[in-house]
Amino acid sequence: MILAEDLNANRLLIDDFAARREAQSRNLPVIGTVAFILLAKKLGIIPVVKNLLDDLVAQGARIGQKLYRDALIVAGE
Image (cartoon, rainbow, N blue to C red; front, side, top):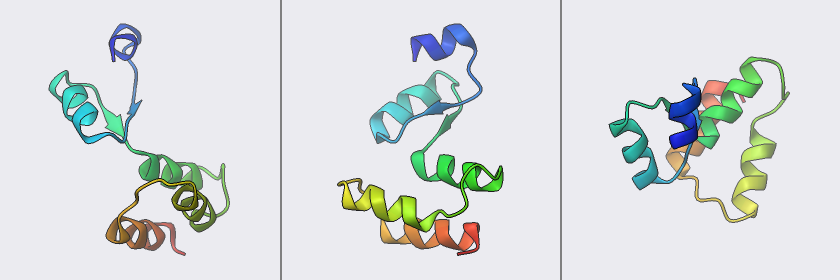
């Protein structure tokens, strides 16, 4: 967070709830992994969101069912 503040970062990639709260209290703009993946698809960097989300879940990432479904809807998948 200190580096993000020093660099005046556009976004700080954080999924941990407590860390997100701390970053927001410092007025740092945060983005989570799922939103980052959606942005990558929107920018044409990746073609499909579902495969990445499935891989993350298989590796132990905790992505709620609602967030998972909403992300696929936003991605048009």
